[in-house]
Length: 172
Image (cartoon, rainbow, N blue to C red; front, top):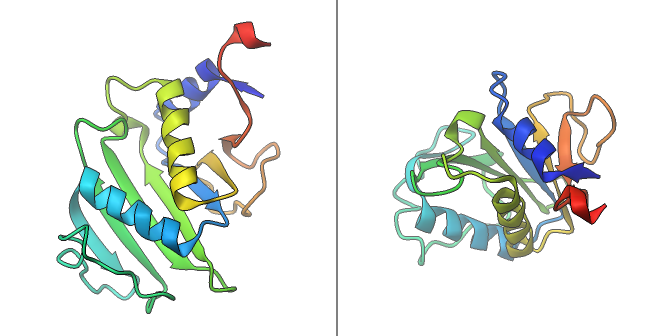
């Protein structure tokens, strides 16, 4: 279990690495809903595929885009900004897993967390996104290129995962 204070410290620690949020077993419908949420709430300044195809105009009309499933490319990557959002600078990666299910990762840097940031608001946002994606669980972690999906032991870089949060020390 981890306290909100520990979550805040880990997320706000400017250590040169980004923070990633990975979702286990999201659905394609949920992934489309997440992409629509993203383009409604963020000004998209880049959107491209692994092959370098520019998708920015494709995401200009949030309500009308349809995602080709499976994705024709290895993955798509969107970057956006919203100075009013809890995470002011956010990146979204969507790809195909080997079994045809979606891979979804959100990435941000500690410096892009809004001045109004709170650990509890962050936990609520990630849980809202997990539900939107119809995902079974999530992992919030420090960047770690050797991370194996689902690993949460010592040295994995996982800050917290679904069900790990203690809202306050009083709830122990």
